Image 1 (cartoon, one colour):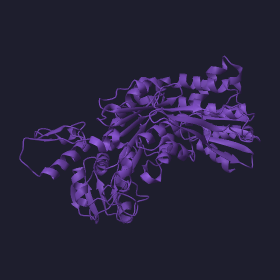
Image 2 (image 1 turned 180 degrees about the vertical axis):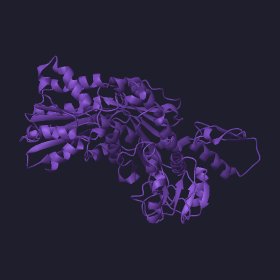
Image 3 (image 1 turned 30 degrees about the vertical axis):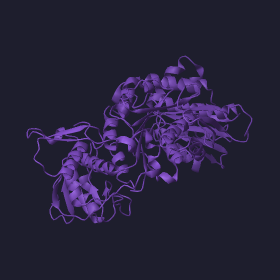
Length: 550
């Protein structure tokens, strides 16, 4: 039952022996079995065999599917959340009803819960949602979904479940079962969010795309995203992250993408997977249970991605640089040294996209800098093309792309006369190297350059070596000022200072606040281009705020 879902071809459901526990059955399988019971009634059969045909509506002919799929059927409230009756909550989550409640959507945060919503009390190692049940009641909630029985004198609805996280995932899975459109699942070591945003632009308004917001890309965020899906959406674009093996598999089992994307494999989140090969194995979970007719989008420039096993019957579509032989290729047409746009800090970001299958070509010009954007745009174009969108239309739409906050976003401070390259949302060796390439673009055009770096976290035993390599790359670029925050980069600076004199002038600090105090004057010299980059836990965005707002 590990891969038991509606839409899986040739699924056989057997009666479970009484000795089997429900703990052995994943929530999505439970939802599937319940749907069979609803469809066929309580028939006394020892075996029910149901075949779901995945034919044209989800196969390669999905080129016309986006345009013609009918609206999915569920009700949403004023918050945009999918509405469940109390009976549905109990049935889907295998819960126990203590108190009746009115229909409503699900919310996991009492700070934003609205009257009429159900508060689902998530719990973890450092938090306990049940502690906020009375806050939800004060806010007018319809009821609470909890692992515990209700408090005395409770006056709203109450459903007790075995595990609230599994309950949330089961609710999302039942909504996915009802969705009739295309689901795009995107994972990769870097570039997930950028591809997600570019893909939403490429698909356009006519698809009513429902897209992951912010960083809702984990075992909680993906279900919450699904539970906000409007019924008129024709495409879902879901970002999926991981920090340990099995996490992508869980997200895929809930969302069941029909277009599955791996952007790349690089050192990131090594604590949970040990090494890059472990990262590749975890990312390959995106493709592992794909079914015939699903589309798998691969990076032709990444040998680890290309080595991933693709199940028989799936359609493979690739993207990559010129000469890669990919289905969608990109070729840079503007070099850093070109004279066009000398009044700009960065050279124009221009490249050519080519759809080999349909013999289409388009020149794309982005207002945002970043050497990585050409590859991300090619990836998003590959996704758009397999949904039936012409490359020329998708490419033209992506020219309006603006980088999200914290991801290579450019801001200018007129008071200081500086340009800030805000890449502070997260960091890994590959993404930092890409940021250096962007900053070198400004240096090559004659600008004073400053690199402010925070530690790259979750790199496990490889951390010191990767920080030394990254700082070496930074020093080799000969930026005018370099400052680092955190134990890992500080140790790397000490190691390098023994062999190269330029490492001795790196400004070293324990954290972002201390780095700002030590480097605020040289970093804000008129005409500077300042890169700020670091892992989320380093809080480098505090430096960005000072550079932009002060």
